[in-house]
Length: 262
Image (cartoon, rainbow, N blue to C red; front, side, top):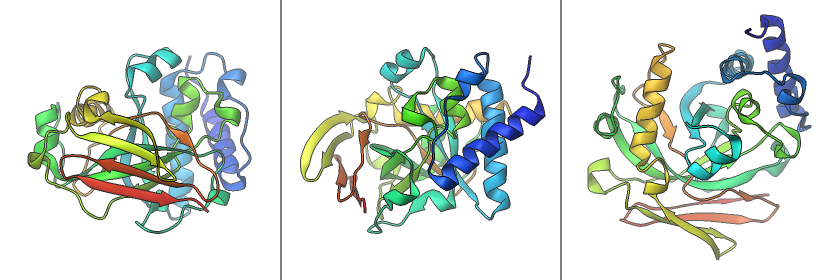
Protein backbone atom coordinates (compact mmCIF):
# COMPACT_ATOMS: atom_id res chain seq x y z
CA UNK A 1 0.00 0.00 0.00
CA UNK A 2 1.35 3.42 -0.97
CA UNK A 3 2.33 5.76 1.81
CA UNK A 4 -0.28 8.43 2.53
CA UNK A 5 0.40 11.90 1.16
CA UNK A 6 0.54 13.31 4.68
CA UNK A 7 3.34 10.92 5.64
CA UNK A 8 5.22 11.72 2.42
CA UNK A 9 5.06 15.43 3.25
CA UNK A 10 6.04 14.85 6.88
CA UNK A 11 9.15 12.85 5.99
CA UNK A 12 10.15 15.41 3.35
CA UNK A 13 9.86 18.13 5.99
CA UNK A 14 12.02 16.09 8.39
CA UNK A 15 14.78 15.71 5.80
CA UNK A 16 14.54 19.38 4.95
CA UNK A 17 14.87 20.33 8.61
CA UNK A 18 17.81 17.95 9.04
CA UNK A 19 19.56 19.52 6.06
CA UNK A 20 18.97 23.06 7.28
CA UNK A 21 19.95 22.43 10.92
CA UNK A 22 22.74 19.89 10.15
CA UNK A 23 21.16 17.51 12.64
CA UNK A 24 20.63 14.04 11.17
CA UNK A 25 17.54 11.94 11.78
CA UNK A 26 17.09 8.23 12.32
CA UNK A 27 16.54 5.93 9.34
CA UNK A 28 13.10 6.28 7.79
CA UNK A 29 13.03 2.53 7.29
CA UNK A 30 13.24 2.03 11.06
CA UNK A 31 9.82 3.69 11.32
CA UNK A 32 8.50 2.49 7.98
CA UNK A 33 9.90 -1.05 7.50
CA UNK A 34 7.78 -1.50 4.38
CA UNK A 35 8.83 1.80 2.78
CA UNK A 36 9.17 1.16 -0.94
CA UNK A 37 11.56 2.82 -3.40
CA UNK A 38 8.54 4.34 -5.17
CA UNK A 39 7.36 6.03 -1.98
CA UNK A 40 10.94 7.06 -1.23
CA UNK A 41 11.11 8.83 -4.60
CA UNK A 42 7.85 10.58 -3.74
CA UNK A 43 9.49 11.81 -0.51
CA UNK A 44 12.52 12.96 -2.51
CA UNK A 45 10.32 14.93 -4.93
CA UNK A 46 8.36 16.49 -2.07
CA UNK A 47 11.63 17.59 -0.46
CA UNK A 48 12.93 19.03 -3.72
CA UNK A 49 9.68 20.97 -4.04
CA UNK A 50 10.34 22.55 -0.64
CA UNK A 51 13.79 23.66 -1.75
CA UNK A 52 12.52 24.94 -5.08
CA UNK A 53 9.89 26.99 -3.26
CA UNK A 54 12.77 28.71 -1.45
CA UNK A 55 14.40 29.63 -4.76
CA UNK A 56 16.62 26.66 -5.70
CA UNK A 57 16.70 25.47 -9.33
CA UNK A 58 17.18 21.96 -10.68
CA UNK A 59 20.29 22.01 -12.89
CA UNK A 60 20.86 18.30 -13.31
CA UNK A 61 20.67 14.79 -11.92
CA UNK A 62 23.00 12.44 -10.08
CA UNK A 63 23.25 8.67 -10.30
CA UNK A 64 24.19 6.56 -7.28
CA UNK A 65 24.77 2.89 -6.52
CA UNK A 66 26.47 2.24 -9.86
CA UNK A 67 28.99 -0.25 -8.46
CA UNK A 68 28.09 -3.90 -7.96
CA UNK A 69 29.65 -3.74 -4.48
CA UNK A 70 27.29 -0.97 -3.32
CA UNK A 71 24.30 -2.64 -4.93
CA UNK A 72 25.09 -5.91 -3.17
CA UNK A 73 25.53 -4.11 0.16
CA UNK A 74 22.03 -2.62 -0.08
CA UNK A 75 20.48 -5.67 -1.75
CA UNK A 76 19.47 -3.92 -4.97
CA UNK A 77 20.05 -4.62 -8.63
CA UNK A 78 19.96 -1.17 -10.21
CA UNK A 79 21.25 2.32 -9.43
CA UNK A 80 19.27 5.15 -7.87
CA UNK A 81 19.11 8.84 -8.70
CA UNK A 82 18.68 12.28 -7.22
CA UNK A 83 18.49 15.91 -8.24
CA UNK A 84 21.32 18.41 -8.59
CA UNK A 85 20.27 21.90 -7.51
CA UNK A 86 22.08 25.12 -8.31
CA UNK A 87 22.66 25.59 -4.58
CA UNK A 88 24.71 22.37 -4.56
CA UNK A 89 27.21 23.41 -7.25
CA UNK A 90 30.49 24.91 -6.00
CA UNK A 91 32.67 26.90 -8.39
CA UNK A 92 36.19 25.57 -9.04
CA UNK A 93 38.61 27.00 -6.50
CA UNK A 94 35.93 27.90 -3.98
CA UNK A 95 36.23 26.16 -0.59
CA UNK A 96 33.68 23.62 0.60
CA UNK A 97 32.17 24.72 3.90
CA UNK A 98 31.90 21.77 6.26
CA UNK A 99 29.54 23.65 8.56
CA UNK A 100 26.95 23.55 5.77
CA UNK A 101 27.06 19.75 5.62
CA UNK A 102 26.14 16.92 7.97
CA UNK A 103 28.54 13.99 7.45
CA UNK A 104 30.17 14.45 4.05
CA UNK A 105 32.26 12.08 1.99
CA UNK A 106 34.01 12.69 -1.33
CA UNK A 107 34.14 10.66 -4.52
CA UNK A 108 35.50 11.22 -8.02
CA UNK A 109 33.23 10.95 -11.04
CA UNK A 110 32.82 11.81 -14.69
CA UNK A 111 30.10 14.41 -15.27
CA UNK A 112 28.20 14.84 -18.53
CA UNK A 113 27.14 18.31 -19.72
CA UNK A 114 24.29 17.76 -22.13
CA UNK A 115 24.22 19.69 -25.38
CA UNK A 116 20.76 18.50 -26.31
CA UNK A 117 17.94 16.44 -24.85
CA UNK A 118 18.59 12.71 -24.49
CA UNK A 119 16.05 10.74 -26.58
CA UNK A 120 14.34 7.71 -25.09
CA UNK A 121 14.57 4.81 -25.12
CA UNK A 122 18.23 5.71 -24.79
CA UNK A 123 21.45 3.80 -25.40
CA UNK A 124 24.96 4.76 -24.39
CA UNK A 125 25.50 5.99 -27.96
CA UNK A 126 22.44 8.27 -27.70
CA UNK A 127 23.93 9.75 -24.53
CA UNK A 128 27.30 10.38 -26.18
CA UNK A 129 25.65 12.06 -29.16
CA UNK A 130 23.62 14.30 -26.82
CA UNK A 131 26.64 15.24 -24.67
CA UNK A 132 28.48 18.52 -25.25
CA UNK A 133 31.30 17.84 -22.79
CA UNK A 134 32.47 15.32 -20.23
CA UNK A 135 34.30 16.89 -17.30
CA UNK A 136 36.07 15.72 -14.12
CA UNK A 137 33.86 16.05 -11.07
CA UNK A 138 34.00 15.64 -7.32
CA UNK A 139 30.72 14.74 -5.71
CA UNK A 140 30.45 15.45 -2.01
CA UNK A 141 27.87 12.95 -0.87
CA UNK A 142 26.12 13.60 2.42
CA UNK A 143 23.47 11.91 4.48
CA UNK A 144 20.73 13.38 6.59
CA UNK A 145 20.35 9.87 8.06
CA UNK A 146 22.28 9.43 11.29
CA UNK A 147 25.54 7.51 10.93
CA UNK A 148 24.86 6.65 7.29
CA UNK A 149 22.60 3.85 8.55
CA UNK A 150 20.84 3.58 5.22
CA UNK A 151 18.85 1.08 3.29
CA UNK A 152 17.84 1.79 -0.30
CA UNK A 153 14.62 3.72 0.55
CA UNK A 154 16.54 5.88 3.03
CA UNK A 155 19.11 7.07 0.50
CA UNK A 156 16.49 7.50 -2.23
CA UNK A 157 14.30 9.68 0.00
CA UNK A 158 17.43 11.64 0.99
CA UNK A 159 17.95 12.75 -2.64
CA UNK A 160 20.36 9.86 -3.21
CA UNK A 161 22.56 11.11 -0.36
CA UNK A 162 23.39 14.34 -2.18
CA UNK A 163 25.59 17.14 -0.89
CA UNK A 164 27.71 19.30 -3.15
CA UNK A 165 29.27 19.11 -6.62
CA UNK A 166 32.55 20.55 -7.92
CA UNK A 167 33.12 20.51 -11.68
CA UNK A 168 36.38 21.13 -13.51
CA UNK A 169 36.50 24.27 -15.64
CA UNK A 170 37.45 22.29 -18.75
CA UNK A 171 36.47 18.99 -20.29
CA UNK A 172 36.54 17.06 -23.55
CA UNK A 173 34.02 16.13 -26.19
CA UNK A 174 32.94 12.52 -25.67
CA UNK A 175 34.33 11.52 -29.08
CA UNK A 176 37.81 12.54 -27.92
CA UNK A 177 38.23 9.63 -25.51
CA UNK A 178 37.00 6.16 -24.56
CA UNK A 179 35.08 6.62 -21.32
CA UNK A 180 35.50 3.00 -20.31
CA UNK A 181 39.29 3.32 -20.37
CA UNK A 182 39.64 6.71 -18.66
CA UNK A 183 41.63 6.10 -15.51
CA UNK A 184 41.26 8.09 -12.31
CA UNK A 185 43.65 8.55 -9.40
CA UNK A 186 41.96 9.79 -6.24
CA UNK A 187 44.11 11.76 -3.80
CA UNK A 188 43.67 13.22 -0.33
CA UNK A 189 46.21 15.81 0.84
CA UNK A 190 48.60 14.72 -1.89
CA UNK A 191 48.43 11.03 -1.00
CA UNK A 192 46.94 8.54 -3.43
CA UNK A 193 43.98 6.75 -1.88
CA UNK A 194 42.57 4.73 -4.76
CA UNK A 195 42.38 4.38 -8.50
CA UNK A 196 39.91 3.10 -11.02
CA UNK A 197 38.55 3.51 -14.52
CA UNK A 198 35.32 4.55 -16.15
CA UNK A 199 34.38 0.92 -16.71
CA UNK A 200 33.71 0.66 -12.95
CA UNK A 201 30.50 2.66 -13.54
CA UNK A 202 28.06 0.09 -14.98
CA UNK A 203 30.70 -0.86 -17.53
CA UNK A 204 30.53 2.60 -19.11
CA UNK A 205 29.53 5.95 -17.58
CA UNK A 206 27.43 6.69 -20.66
CA UNK A 207 25.46 3.49 -19.99
CA UNK A 208 24.67 4.81 -16.50
CA UNK A 209 23.29 8.02 -18.00
CA UNK A 210 21.25 5.98 -20.50
CA UNK A 211 19.80 3.99 -17.58
CA UNK A 212 18.81 7.26 -15.93
CA UNK A 213 17.18 8.61 -19.10
CA UNK A 214 15.14 5.44 -19.48
CA UNK A 215 14.20 5.34 -15.80
CA UNK A 216 13.01 8.95 -15.77
CA UNK A 217 11.11 8.46 -19.03
CA UNK A 218 8.73 6.20 -17.06
CA UNK A 219 7.67 9.38 -15.23
CA UNK A 220 7.77 11.65 -18.33
CA UNK A 221 10.88 13.43 -17.02
CA UNK A 222 13.45 14.12 -19.78
CA UNK A 223 17.17 14.75 -19.50
CA UNK A 224 17.40 18.24 -20.98
CA UNK A 225 20.07 20.17 -22.86
CA UNK A 226 22.27 22.08 -20.43
CA UNK A 227 21.80 19.67 -17.54
CA UNK A 228 24.71 18.33 -15.48
CA UNK A 229 24.56 14.55 -15.06
CA UNK A 230 26.84 12.91 -12.48
CA UNK A 231 27.39 9.38 -13.72
CA UNK A 232 28.46 7.64 -10.50
CA UNK A 233 31.51 7.08 -8.33
CA UNK A 234 34.56 5.39 -9.82
CA UNK A 235 36.05 4.52 -6.40
CA UNK A 236 34.79 4.46 -2.83
CA UNK A 237 33.80 7.68 -1.04
CA UNK A 238 36.14 9.07 1.64
CA UNK A 239 35.20 11.10 4.71
CA UNK A 240 36.08 14.81 4.58
CA UNK A 241 37.53 16.82 7.47
CA UNK A 242 38.60 20.47 7.91
CA UNK A 243 41.70 21.30 5.88
CA UNK A 244 41.45 18.27 3.60
CA UNK A 245 42.28 18.74 -0.08
CA UNK A 246 40.82 16.14 -2.43
CA UNK A 247 41.90 15.77 -6.05
CA UNK A 248 40.68 13.44 -8.78
CA UNK A 249 43.15 13.14 -11.66
CA UNK A 250 41.84 11.63 -14.88
CA UNK A 251 43.77 10.12 -17.76
CA UNK A 252 43.26 10.41 -21.52
CA UNK A 253 43.74 14.18 -21.29
CA UNK A 254 40.52 14.73 -19.36
CA UNK A 255 42.29 16.66 -16.60
CA UNK A 256 41.68 17.00 -12.86
CA UNK A 257 39.44 18.64 -10.27
CA UNK A 258 40.13 19.57 -6.64
CA UNK A 259 38.22 20.73 -3.59
CA UNK A 260 39.45 22.00 -0.23
CA UNK A 261 37.33 21.73 2.90
CA UNK A 262 37.19 24.48 5.51
